[in-house]
Amino acid sequence: MTEHKKEFFMRDPWKFDPNFKRPARANDELGFDTRSLHAGFHPNEDMERFRAFVPPIVPSMTYPYRDFDHIPYPVYARTKTPTADILEQRIAALEGGEAAVTAGSGSQALFNLIFTIARPGDNIVTSLYTFGEGYKQAASIFPERCGVNFRFVEDPADPKSWDKQIDTKTKLVWVETPSNPTLYVTDLKAVAEVAHARNVPMMVDNTTATAALQRPMDFGADIVLLSITKFMAGNATVLGGAIVGPEDLTEDIRWNTTEFVGSIMQPFDSWLTIQYLETLGMRMDKHSFNTQKVAEYLTDHPKVKLVNYPGLDTHPQYELAKKQMKSAGGMLSFVVEGGIPSARTLMNSLKLIVHAVTFGTSRTICMHPRTITHEHMTQEERDIAGIDDGLIRVSVGLENYNDLIADLEQALAKV
Ligand SMILES: Cc1ncc(COP(=O)(O)O)c(C=O)c1O
Image (cartoon, rainbow, N blue to C red; front, side, top):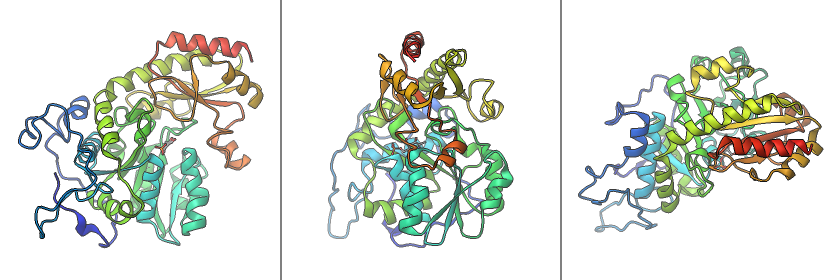
């Protein structure tokens, strides 16, 4: 357990240091699957405290003082618990960051980060290739309520486009890759170079790929945003998120934002996630395998206008995705001929595939971004971001892919 960190309260805010190098960790040399099983808790090391093979769940929300002068840590479950501590260490180890702080959801993790690092008059540079709740924070919540503005780059494939939007008030460059829901792939190394040349940190949302398939910090990211709700937990039983980065930043978030808006992930959700992370590598391999099969099937279908999947050699950033990712991941989207009426018929006809708002689940899910997650974008923004009226997002699960293709086949026949 780390020592008490309450000294971070009201300390000078975190300042980006482009030369920051996180200190080496004991298990750095271990492979991804080994770290997903051992980082943050090992029975042999924790013998005295727990003498348990499985990481413990400690549901207490307060942690008693031994005596008047003792300062316990954790002190209160809004900011830390022993179970969340294991999870945070594990996530940091998987992403290759120094530390992590969890949040009640991925959307909250993004909110906490921006609220911690930006002040009225500051700005954040991003693109229109972001998840819906992220776009809403950027386009409306932060500008209107906190005076923090967001600048959307014109051409995210062009590093100069990113550079053009950065000025002395820019506090963060935010990249989501592959993006939800159109699977746009951004060149992490190129954007990191631009951001660092202007002394600005780069945050990468690694929710769709996870550290099993992509490690943004290996390409220059300083901060990683995660929705744990998706592939990391993997079956729609947990809501959670995290920020990975320098400990000075994660503790600034914990003590100066999370402390007041509450809270980190609670013990049971943390514990479930620890169990689920044990199989993340295996699951992501199968998600990628299945998604490739479904993407190839859809590509050949006459009623499908376009398939977005970075594993297809027709994807505009196919080569870039191969450089940045181990495999292309578990999400695709496609455009059905005939816009909203066709999307409605198709989605109403699916029998196995479930229509619901999330992704990264063991069971296959579909969703209509135009009407559900990206409804607040202007039509012009949707056109730029590829949110077509006929766009359907599919999070391909762990079923036998032939059954998924058969379900899509019979539903497309009704269109
Ligand atoms: C890429 C991405 N990041 C973050 C989030 C937010 O995660 P949560 O649903 O846990 O708030 C989402 C949600 O859809 C997402 O798609």
